[in-house]
Image (tube, rainbow, N blue to C red; front, side, top):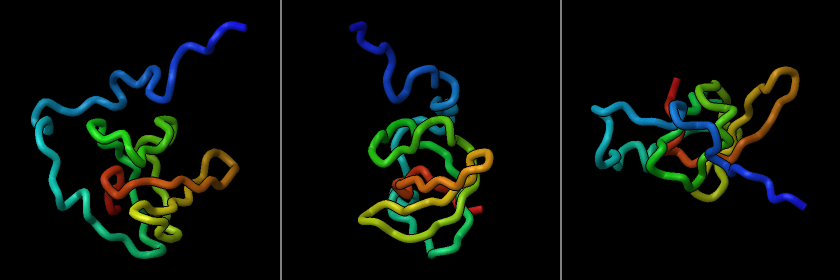
Length: 96
């Protein structure tokens, strides 16, 4: 059998790229931000941290926080007609 080429971040050269002014150390404020159940959040990946990142297909989607799981949050999004739950670290989330 042929091994599948490509991994989690395949074909995301421009999608997971930082602006030149945003490069450098990340803010600890974004790392430790808190959300409540029912908050609307934007999925915006922080490319320098891969832990707790969602699949790149869902980049820049708006979802709802359902609950907290460990350090991460469960986010409910609508992908076409299906509702899906993603487990995302708060560094990859922005409040709407």
